[in-house]
Length: 376
Image (tube, rainbow, N blue to C red; front, side):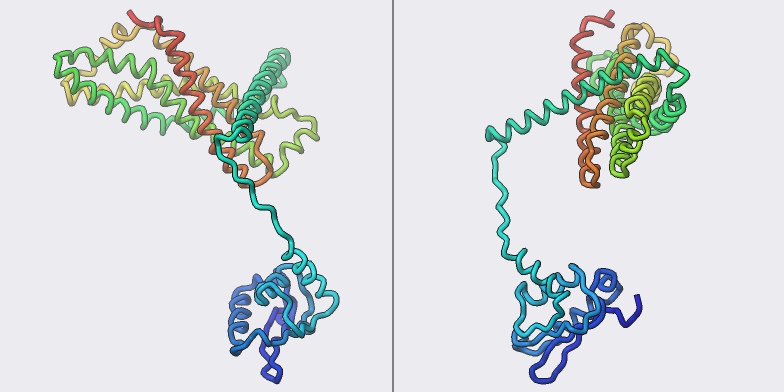
């Protein structure tokens, strides 16, 4: 912007004193470094009794709502007496004057236990449940399409999602699994030593890790890492209108976006469960060697007898179900994100919390349904 268009404010000391505004009072000029500070300094140079000062805006070359709002704030939200302004610019202050007289309705305060609030929560939960059910139904239709025409399946998307959700999660799942195994082994060893049952550490560690902790740890980590990534990816596509563009081009969301993510997580999660189990058992063996002097060879030899084979299949089944649930929840919240950044942040947070909650609920269902399976 040329210098002569820079917004300026000067005080004319002649009687009566008046502020003279020049230049283009638009957002681009006001955003230049030091411009607002210079205007504020000129405003503060007014002598005592500034309310009687006159304002001359005839030197303005341009004005927009930002410049008019700055002046309106400087005038303490009322038109100063003796204002000189062109009719074109005067319209901005007329609108500000009219807007200032509007009384905004105060927000209605409702307690969370009021019938209206409870009904709103119920409708929200029902909407999410129906949305997840519709997403699952669409997934079944897409799987049918995949089986009929596998040559048109999004194999590249499936492979990419397996890489991101599975391979790139090996590091964090290994670290957390190893540390959990160490902690569990140390705590169990101290109790078993009291009762002289050191040799049963293999039973406790093997059953707890393979049947419960391994699948649950892997699911929670994948929900926080890959679930949030899926929701954010779909949310960004909503914000940038890529989802709308796909529909215009005839590319269904379910077959091209939802199906690859569900298949990828359903394949990657059981493998991550095996990996997490192995690292947790290695951590437990290391702690058992240090705390109880149990050799890793004894640990490996005793483990197949201590943990019946059915527990391995239950753990893998949990991983498969958890992967599908995490992908569906992440896609559901990703598709419901509105085209603004605030909704993107809220949707991602709610998606992770909901996915972890549903995983824990599903784990409880597994514990009840298979309560009589896998114990010798």
